[in-house]
Picture 1 (cartoon, helix red, strand yellow):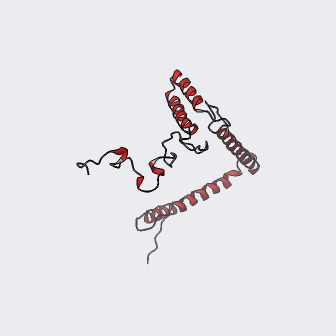
Picture 2 (spheres, helix red, strand yellow):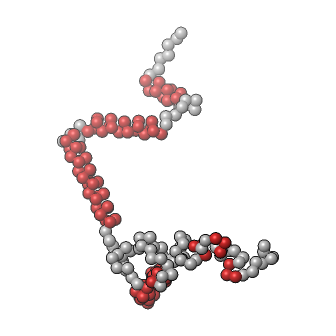
Picture 3 (cartoon, rainbow, N blue to C red):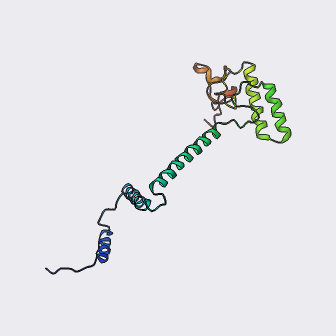
Length: 184
């Protein structure tokens, strides 16, 4: 059998060409990621000694980087927890009465802030219903912005009545209407 005389670069190219064929399985994403990390660590080990100060300089820089990350995370967490103010605290000590919500809504409407005005007007309606005992008082953390939210908040609503008196608003007999024979 004759020997094949091939240099190193040509053998490398031939091997790469052969292993690049679709019949050979490709490395998974995790294997390629691990190979890349290993390659970067090897580069760091080889070139780490060429940095002025060597590994001591790299160690100091890594410690400074870790301190900077900890400080940045601490500042970000503190910033997210601060109270930025506003018209009223969401769960503050003092809950506004219906009249106070109406007055606040009028103030917002006077300056043209309609979304805040509508929000406070709805809160005034809900508070008035609570004050007149139509709605059960709900803790501020659980209170929706509208009194018509689901959950049976109305004491005498059809939803809270047991038995056959319970009607849905789509029922033909709701609001004392007679069924329409044409719609079924």
